[in-house]
Amino acid sequence: MAGRGGSEQPQRVECDTAAVAVPVLPEDGTCAASSVLDLLGDPSVREVHLTSRPESASTARRLALSVIGVWGLPQFGDTVELLVSELVGNAVRHTGARSFGLRMRRRPRWVRVEVRDPSRALPCLLPVRELDTSGRGLFLVDRLSDRWGVDLQPRGKTTWFELRVPER
Image (tube, rainbow, N blue to C red; front, side, top):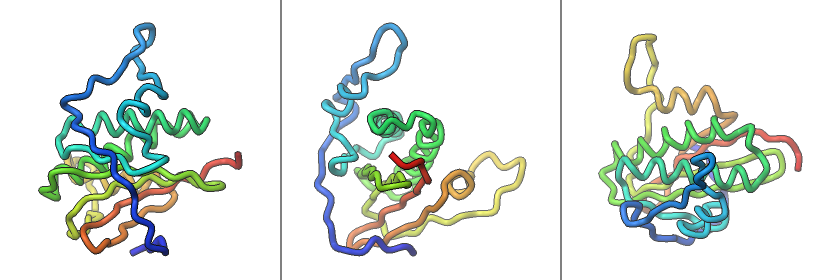
């Protein structure tokens, strides 16, 4: 287990993804970063709380990609998008929770992405064989991130990954 230290409590922004239309730029089909962050909340400012449904993974990916774009780190977009999908997928499939939280932090040389859920059940990194069609989520997180871990909270856990990035 990795500890963050301190007792900082993230603020929540409630969002029912089924009721929110995310703006799309017609010319290239991508979301306008500032519009998405303004509409749904900015996970780099405070935790964004999303409904625990499979379709919320796309909302979490949009939010994460928007923040990565604002931070001027588009070269990390594909990796962040994939790893956010894996962490959110685990939170939605395996916890039975009604919601989960997404938080992103930028420090010198590091980007950290956190997915918080109310379950204290720990995710398990399983061995993966070539023909396996499931169970690859944490394997991908382990292979593609520079560090990852789980912080147990009094009510639930935060599963996180970090990527090493160039100095600003």
